[in-house]
Length: 287
Image (cartoon, rainbow, N blue to C red; front, side, top):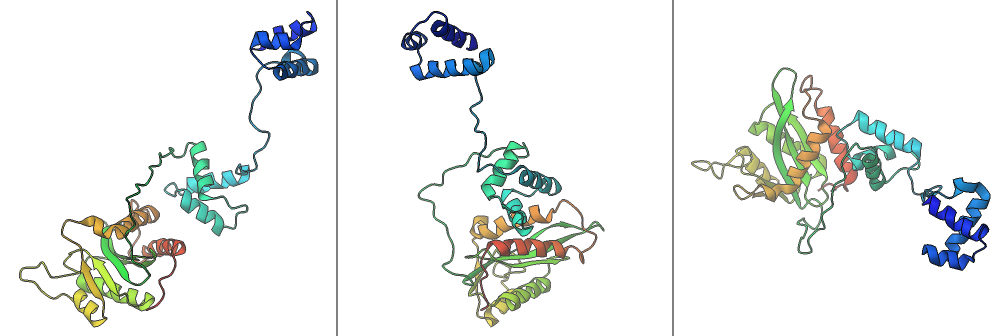
Protein backbone atom coordinates (compact mmCIF):
# COMPACT_ATOMS: atom_id res chain seq x y z
CA UNK A 1 0.00 0.00 0.00
CA UNK A 2 2.84 2.42 0.82
CA UNK A 3 4.45 1.68 -2.58
CA UNK A 4 1.22 2.50 -4.43
CA UNK A 5 0.92 5.78 -2.55
CA UNK A 6 4.53 6.59 -3.37
CA UNK A 7 3.85 6.02 -7.07
CA UNK A 8 0.85 8.36 -6.86
CA UNK A 9 2.98 11.03 -5.18
CA UNK A 10 5.67 10.67 -7.87
CA UNK A 11 3.00 10.97 -10.55
CA UNK A 12 2.13 14.42 -9.23
CA UNK A 13 5.55 15.72 -8.15
CA UNK A 14 7.90 14.17 -10.76
CA UNK A 15 5.67 13.61 -13.77
CA UNK A 16 3.59 16.75 -13.32
CA UNK A 17 0.27 14.95 -13.69
CA UNK A 18 -2.92 16.50 -12.36
CA UNK A 19 -4.16 15.44 -8.93
CA UNK A 20 -7.58 14.59 -10.40
CA UNK A 21 -5.96 12.29 -12.99
CA UNK A 22 -3.88 10.45 -10.39
CA UNK A 23 -6.86 10.13 -8.06
CA UNK A 24 -9.02 8.69 -10.85
CA UNK A 25 -6.32 6.19 -11.79
CA UNK A 26 -5.89 5.03 -8.16
CA UNK A 27 -9.63 4.94 -7.45
CA UNK A 28 -9.45 7.45 -4.61
CA UNK A 29 -10.63 11.01 -4.05
CA UNK A 30 -8.61 14.14 -4.73
CA UNK A 31 -8.63 14.84 -1.00
CA UNK A 32 -6.87 11.53 -0.36
CA UNK A 33 -4.12 12.31 -2.89
CA UNK A 34 -3.62 15.74 -1.32
CA UNK A 35 -3.30 14.06 2.09
CA UNK A 36 -0.62 11.69 0.73
CA UNK A 37 1.29 14.64 -0.71
CA UNK A 38 1.18 16.49 2.61
CA UNK A 39 2.39 13.46 4.55
CA UNK A 40 5.18 12.83 2.05
CA UNK A 41 6.38 16.42 2.23
CA UNK A 42 6.32 16.32 6.05
CA UNK A 43 7.82 12.86 6.75
CA UNK A 44 9.01 11.40 3.45
CA UNK A 45 8.42 7.68 2.85
CA UNK A 46 7.77 7.13 6.57
CA UNK A 47 4.56 9.13 6.29
CA UNK A 48 2.95 6.92 3.64
CA UNK A 49 2.22 3.58 5.45
CA UNK A 50 -1.12 3.00 7.15
CA UNK A 51 -1.61 4.77 10.45
CA UNK A 52 -3.59 3.69 13.49
CA UNK A 53 -7.14 5.01 13.58
CA UNK A 54 -7.29 4.77 17.35
CA UNK A 55 -8.15 8.13 18.94
CA UNK A 56 -5.43 9.83 20.94
CA UNK A 57 -7.63 9.72 24.05
CA UNK A 58 -11.04 8.38 25.03
CA UNK A 59 -12.88 10.26 27.77
CA UNK A 60 -14.99 7.17 28.55
CA UNK A 61 -11.99 4.84 29.02
CA UNK A 62 -11.47 3.66 32.59
CA UNK A 63 -8.33 5.28 34.09
CA UNK A 64 -5.40 2.89 34.36
CA UNK A 65 -5.14 3.24 38.15
CA UNK A 66 -8.83 2.36 38.56
CA UNK A 67 -8.44 -0.64 36.26
CA UNK A 68 -5.54 -1.87 38.39
CA UNK A 69 -7.68 -1.62 41.52
CA UNK A 70 -10.49 -3.56 39.82
CA UNK A 71 -8.17 -6.39 38.81
CA UNK A 72 -6.47 -6.50 42.22
CA UNK A 73 -9.84 -6.74 43.92
CA UNK A 74 -10.92 -9.47 41.53
CA UNK A 75 -7.68 -11.38 42.14
CA UNK A 76 -8.30 -11.28 45.89
CA UNK A 77 -11.95 -12.35 45.46
CA UNK A 78 -12.09 -14.50 42.35
CA UNK A 79 -15.82 -15.23 42.68
CA UNK A 80 -16.91 -11.59 42.66
CA UNK A 81 -18.62 -10.41 39.51
CA UNK A 82 -18.82 -6.97 37.95
CA UNK A 83 -21.75 -5.89 40.12
CA UNK A 84 -20.05 -6.77 43.41
CA UNK A 85 -16.74 -5.24 42.32
CA UNK A 86 -18.44 -1.98 41.35
CA UNK A 87 -20.24 -1.92 44.70
CA UNK A 88 -17.02 -2.49 46.66
CA UNK A 89 -15.25 0.31 44.80
CA UNK A 90 -18.07 2.67 45.80
CA UNK A 91 -17.74 1.52 49.40
CA UNK A 92 -14.01 2.22 49.26
CA UNK A 93 -14.76 5.76 47.97
CA UNK A 94 -12.85 5.19 44.73
CA UNK A 95 -13.27 8.19 42.43
CA UNK A 96 -14.34 8.24 39.73
CA UNK A 97 -16.36 5.13 40.62
CA UNK A 98 -16.77 2.92 37.51
CA UNK A 99 -20.13 1.55 36.51
CA UNK A 100 -20.96 -2.16 36.50
CA UNK A 101 -20.70 -2.28 32.70
CA UNK A 102 -17.29 -0.58 32.79
CA UNK A 103 -16.02 -3.12 35.31
CA UNK A 104 -17.40 -5.93 33.14
CA UNK A 105 -15.52 -4.62 30.07
CA UNK A 106 -12.36 -4.32 32.18
CA UNK A 107 -12.60 -7.98 33.21
CA UNK A 108 -13.17 -9.04 29.61
CA UNK A 109 -10.16 -7.03 28.37
CA UNK A 110 -7.95 -8.63 31.00
CA UNK A 111 -9.14 -12.11 30.01
CA UNK A 112 -10.40 -12.77 33.54
CA UNK A 113 -13.88 -13.71 32.31
CA UNK A 114 -15.32 -14.74 28.99
CA UNK A 115 -17.85 -12.38 27.38
CA UNK A 116 -21.38 -13.66 27.78
CA UNK A 117 -23.84 -13.43 24.93
CA UNK A 118 -26.91 -11.64 26.18
CA UNK A 119 -30.33 -13.06 25.36
CA UNK A 120 -33.16 -10.70 24.61
CA UNK A 121 -35.99 -11.15 27.05
CA UNK A 122 -39.20 -12.46 25.50
CA UNK A 123 -42.00 -9.94 25.28
CA UNK A 124 -44.45 -12.39 26.83
CA UNK A 125 -42.23 -12.78 29.91
CA UNK A 126 -43.64 -11.18 33.02
CA UNK A 127 -42.08 -10.77 36.46
CA UNK A 128 -44.01 -12.46 39.24
CA UNK A 129 -43.80 -10.50 42.47
CA UNK A 130 -46.02 -8.99 45.12
CA UNK A 131 -47.06 -5.37 44.84
CA UNK A 132 -45.37 -4.17 48.02
CA UNK A 133 -42.93 -5.18 50.77
CA UNK A 134 -43.99 -7.36 53.71
CA UNK A 135 -46.80 -8.96 51.68
CA UNK A 136 -44.91 -12.24 51.23
CA UNK A 137 -41.69 -13.83 52.49
CA UNK A 138 -40.09 -16.77 50.72
CA UNK A 139 -38.26 -19.04 53.19
CA UNK A 140 -36.22 -22.20 52.78
CA UNK A 141 -33.41 -24.30 54.24
CA UNK A 142 -30.05 -24.73 52.50
CA UNK A 143 -27.10 -26.86 53.56
CA UNK A 144 -23.48 -27.37 52.63
CA UNK A 145 -21.70 -25.02 55.06
CA UNK A 146 -18.65 -27.08 55.98
CA UNK A 147 -17.03 -26.95 59.42
CA UNK A 148 -13.49 -27.91 60.42
CA UNK A 149 -14.66 -30.84 62.55
CA UNK A 150 -16.07 -32.58 59.48
CA UNK A 151 -19.71 -31.68 60.08
CA UNK A 152 -21.82 -29.24 58.11
CA UNK A 153 -24.34 -26.59 59.05
CA UNK A 154 -27.59 -25.47 57.48
CA UNK A 155 -29.09 -22.03 57.05
CA UNK A 156 -32.64 -20.78 57.37
CA UNK A 157 -32.92 -18.25 54.55
CA UNK A 158 -35.64 -15.77 53.74
CA UNK A 159 -36.22 -12.90 51.30
CA UNK A 160 -39.04 -10.43 50.87
CA UNK A 161 -40.81 -11.26 47.62
CA UNK A 162 -41.17 -7.64 46.49
CA UNK A 163 -37.94 -5.94 47.59
CA UNK A 164 -35.59 -8.99 47.69
CA UNK A 165 -34.61 -7.82 51.17
CA UNK A 166 -32.83 -10.55 53.12
CA UNK A 167 -34.93 -11.21 56.22
CA UNK A 168 -33.09 -14.34 57.38
CA UNK A 169 -29.69 -15.98 56.91
CA UNK A 170 -29.48 -17.91 60.17
CA UNK A 171 -27.05 -20.80 60.54
CA UNK A 172 -27.89 -23.87 62.62
CA UNK A 173 -26.05 -27.13 63.30
CA UNK A 174 -28.89 -29.30 62.02
CA UNK A 175 -32.38 -29.15 60.55
CA UNK A 176 -34.63 -29.20 63.59
CA UNK A 177 -38.13 -27.82 64.02
CA UNK A 178 -37.29 -25.75 67.11
CA UNK A 179 -34.19 -24.20 65.52
CA UNK A 180 -36.11 -23.30 62.36
CA UNK A 181 -38.95 -21.76 64.34
CA UNK A 182 -36.51 -19.81 66.51
CA UNK A 183 -35.03 -18.36 63.32
CA UNK A 184 -38.50 -17.49 62.00
CA UNK A 185 -39.41 -15.72 65.26
CA UNK A 186 -36.10 -13.81 65.22
CA UNK A 187 -36.80 -12.62 61.66
CA UNK A 188 -40.26 -11.37 62.61
CA UNK A 189 -38.87 -9.56 65.65
CA UNK A 190 -36.22 -7.87 63.51
CA UNK A 191 -38.30 -6.94 60.47
CA UNK A 192 -41.96 -7.22 61.41
CA UNK A 193 -44.69 -9.76 60.66
CA UNK A 194 -45.39 -10.47 56.98
CA UNK A 195 -48.85 -11.08 55.62
CA UNK A 196 -47.86 -14.42 54.06
CA UNK A 197 -44.96 -16.88 54.09
CA UNK A 198 -44.18 -19.24 51.21
CA UNK A 199 -42.20 -22.43 51.91
CA UNK A 200 -41.75 -25.87 50.44
CA UNK A 201 -43.34 -28.99 51.96
CA UNK A 202 -40.46 -29.90 54.26
CA UNK A 203 -41.30 -31.58 57.58
CA UNK A 204 -40.05 -28.59 59.58
CA UNK A 205 -42.50 -26.31 57.76
CA UNK A 206 -45.66 -28.39 57.49
CA UNK A 207 -47.19 -31.69 58.49
CA UNK A 208 -49.83 -31.62 55.77
CA UNK A 209 -48.33 -34.54 53.86
CA UNK A 210 -47.43 -36.66 56.89
CA UNK A 211 -49.27 -39.94 57.45
CA UNK A 212 -51.39 -39.11 59.33
CA UNK A 213 -51.26 -35.29 58.89
CA UNK A 214 -49.98 -33.42 61.95
CA UNK A 215 -49.86 -29.82 63.14
CA UNK A 216 -46.25 -28.64 63.35
CA UNK A 217 -44.83 -25.72 65.34
CA UNK A 218 -44.13 -23.58 62.26
CA UNK A 219 -47.80 -23.71 61.25
CA UNK A 220 -48.86 -22.79 64.80
CA UNK A 221 -46.52 -19.80 64.82
CA UNK A 222 -48.03 -18.58 61.56
CA UNK A 223 -51.57 -18.87 62.94
CA UNK A 224 -50.69 -17.14 66.22
CA UNK A 225 -49.12 -14.21 64.36
CA UNK A 226 -51.83 -13.94 61.70
CA UNK A 227 -49.50 -15.09 58.90
CA UNK A 228 -50.99 -16.99 55.97
CA UNK A 229 -48.71 -20.00 55.32
CA UNK A 230 -48.50 -20.89 51.62
CA UNK A 231 -46.97 -24.13 50.33
CA UNK A 232 -45.46 -24.92 46.96
CA UNK A 233 -46.88 -27.64 44.78
CA UNK A 234 -44.93 -30.91 45.08
CA UNK A 235 -41.99 -31.09 42.66
CA UNK A 236 -42.31 -27.38 41.74
CA UNK A 237 -39.03 -25.73 42.84
CA UNK A 238 -39.46 -22.74 40.53
CA UNK A 239 -42.31 -21.45 42.71
CA UNK A 240 -39.71 -20.31 45.24
CA UNK A 241 -37.36 -19.09 42.54
CA UNK A 242 -36.32 -15.92 44.37
CA UNK A 243 -35.04 -17.76 47.44
CA UNK A 244 -33.30 -20.32 45.21
CA UNK A 245 -31.54 -17.46 43.38
CA UNK A 246 -30.56 -16.05 46.77
CA UNK A 247 -28.93 -19.39 47.60
CA UNK A 248 -26.74 -19.02 44.52
CA UNK A 249 -25.54 -15.62 45.71
CA UNK A 250 -25.09 -16.97 49.22
CA UNK A 251 -22.85 -19.81 48.07
CA UNK A 252 -20.68 -17.52 45.92
CA UNK A 253 -20.29 -14.76 48.50
CA UNK A 254 -19.99 -17.13 51.45
CA UNK A 255 -17.60 -19.38 49.48
CA UNK A 256 -19.10 -22.65 50.73
CA UNK A 257 -16.20 -24.66 49.30
CA UNK A 258 -14.05 -23.68 52.26
CA UNK A 259 -14.44 -25.06 55.80
CA UNK A 260 -15.04 -22.72 58.73
CA UNK A 261 -13.35 -23.20 62.07
CA UNK A 262 -16.63 -23.51 63.95
CA UNK A 263 -20.29 -22.62 63.88
CA UNK A 264 -19.50 -19.67 66.14
CA UNK A 265 -17.36 -17.86 63.53
CA UNK A 266 -19.25 -18.85 60.37
CA UNK A 267 -22.31 -16.56 60.87
CA UNK A 268 -20.15 -13.47 60.25
CA UNK A 269 -20.05 -14.47 56.60
CA UNK A 270 -23.81 -14.86 56.31
CA UNK A 271 -24.27 -11.44 57.90
CA UNK A 272 -21.99 -9.94 55.24
CA UNK A 273 -24.08 -11.57 52.52
CA UNK A 274 -27.25 -10.31 54.16
CA UNK A 275 -25.80 -6.79 54.29
CA UNK A 276 -24.91 -7.02 50.60
CA UNK A 277 -28.44 -8.05 49.61
CA UNK A 278 -29.98 -5.41 51.86
CA UNK A 279 -27.77 -2.79 50.26
CA UNK A 280 -29.24 -3.67 46.87
CA UNK A 281 -32.86 -3.78 47.99
CA UNK A 282 -35.09 -1.38 49.83
CA UNK A 283 -35.99 -2.22 53.41
CA UNK A 284 -39.44 -3.80 53.79
CA UNK A 285 -40.11 -1.84 56.96
CA UNK A 286 -41.54 -3.05 60.23
CA UNK A 287 -44.99 -4.54 60.40
